[in-house]
Length: 237
Ligand SMILES: Nc1nc2c(ncn2[C@@H]2O[C@H](COP(=O)(O)OP(=O)(O)OP(=O)(O)O)[C@@H](O)[C@H]2O)c(=O)[nH]1
Ligand SMILES: [Mg+2]
Image (cartoon, rainbow, N blue to C red; front, top):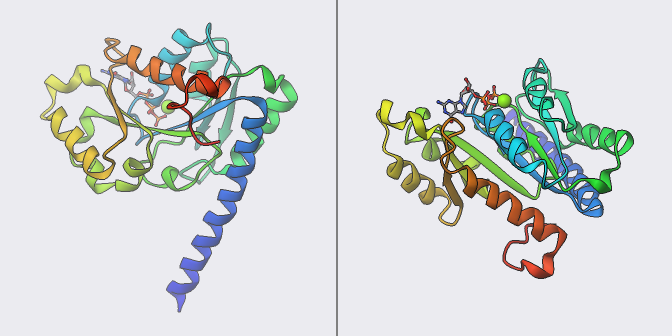
């Protein structure tokens, strides 16, 4: 009986979150913004990737960041150095952003800036390989990172994140020679969970693979702005 109650509560929670996410996405669509939800376990390199992305793409696209952390603005402060609006959200005891928290960020974007002038909103989620994948925030695509130091088995052990991802970045490839890891086995395990996901190997340290990541981002932003020119790239709207 108790279990049934918990399950119902969970479903209601996810249902309410989904309605909020759809509402957020409607705002992004209305303003012509593409939104990515960037997720990984703690320390896989989300902020490092965003630093490289802002350095490379913020001259080409108008970008804002919604930065989720349980406490502190450490990551937000790192990203503010790139001259883009960074809206920090502290989730407190919650291990993920939810659509209501991100709605608060969107509200600030709307009132402090001209939202129609933005092309891209990058949401850095709280470091966690489980919960963020279940709580949509209004994104058009989910980007998941897995660093080479985490082990080949993680896609099999934490399948929801890997099943949900539209783009999967294998990060810190510069460290691969120093750890006992088989990159091909990581990819095989990812494909077992999600056969069609885009997989890109990157190193924020050496720059390996970053151009492929930037191209993936740019093609989806362009497709949002000019869907007729990119029929294959269009994400959900
Ligand atoms: N060698 C190497 N180190 C990296 C790379 N990317 C990130 N790091 C390091 O990994 C650590 C964590 O990187 P972050 O970018 O802070 O990771 P994160 O996923 O944002 O962490 P949380 O927000 O706490 O979940 C830092 O010490 C980075 O310098 C990389 O490509 N190669
Ligand atoms: Mg971070």
